Amino acid sequence: MNTSYDVKLGEIQHRSDRKTMAYIARWTVGRKAKSKSFRTKALAASFLSDLRQATKAGEAFDVTTGLPLSMLAAKAPEGPTFLEFAQTYVASRWRTSAARTRETDVYGLLSLVPALVADLPRRPTDSDLREVLRTHLLLPENRRAVLPGTLVPVRTWLEKASLPLADLANPRVTRSALDAISVTFTGKDAAANTVRRKREVLHHLLELAVEHKELPANPLHAKWVPPKVAGAIDPRTVVNPEQARALLAAIPAVGRTRGGRLHAMFACMYYAALRPEEAAALRRQNCDLPEEGWGLLTVEKAQPQANKRWTNSGETHDSRGLKHRAKDDTREIPIPPVLVAILRAHIDRYGVADDGHLFRTSKGGPFSSSAYSGVWQKARRAAFTAEQVASPLAARPYDLRHAAVSLWLNAGVPATEVAKRAGHGVDVLLKVYAKCIEGQRTPANSKISEALEE
Image (cartoon, rainbow, N blue to C red):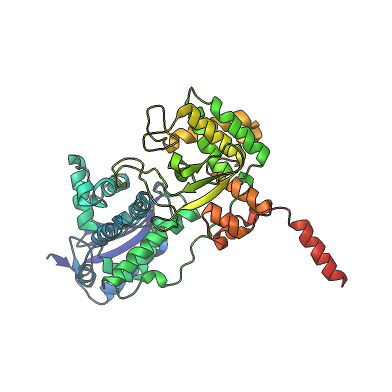
């Protein structure tokens, strides 16, 4: 090892052209310039302080890496790198996780793995690092894409540069991980929900590391205040019954056949409060549709959409059990005569698939989320004023479900029954829809006035 005591510490440079890793600590060892990039000035200053302490202690510095020998020794503990343990984490959850959960896990790691690396020469671009992780390194081996020749050096660099998992016990490294999940891939502040989901991924990974005895304790238990998440539904998104009917009436006119085939599916989201993936999985055998009166839907499956790399079937849609329910659990939802009539008309016109599925394209396949979202946006423009189109009102098909649940609560249906039909817990239901429950202010004011007059 080539070492030197000729060490000169420089200043911290701020690169305004960089959106991330914008603070650069500079120093020289044996007259060779060295640098290391950080997300914040405080991290860069802390690093230079460590180097300064090493020079005061009379330590030799490695000319190749620019680090004092004590830091080099600390950089090579026994145990896996963060990348290696991230692969273990993904593999441990793959079999029991839904496709969207797998995607969420990897999405969180796309921010974390590139941030937890050593400052080795010839760092690839962040987009190339994410591409290698997304399509290769963070997938089970039997699902990995063959890397193009241009990306093989990216994989090699990442495997070499990934920090030891044990480094997460250092508060400075943990802070850099939290900084990484707090910004988007373009360097902007991430939404609170995004930060929360990515932090959950990091937390679960570190809990697994503690279980595997790779870490003595979860370092995220230290105090850190995440951004506040708005858990309640925005009442501005909720349509009233007249607006909902106008939207549903506009759908059949969209496209040559697509709107007509989707009309009943959207109606299920509004009149039965189905999630889009539940409506997509609905089959004829799930529907009791009498000629008169109320009918009944027995919801037993969901058919969420995800990229093929995440699904068990290798298709874009997987058949899954219901959200927040046991594997074979079902949910019964009484449906009003208006929805019964819509479903009967849909079946009469379009029939059902061989396996009983109600909603499918003219070619027999499931509708993609982009397809039904496109129909929805055209229906909004046809049914709403320009001002309403520009507002959050029913901005997504999912908002039909919110409108249904809000309508039931405001109609006085007990929260326990609403929760049963919607597939929520009562506590979650009241928390999520608290701002959408109307008509209680006047009675409440009256009760307070009566109490004040006593």
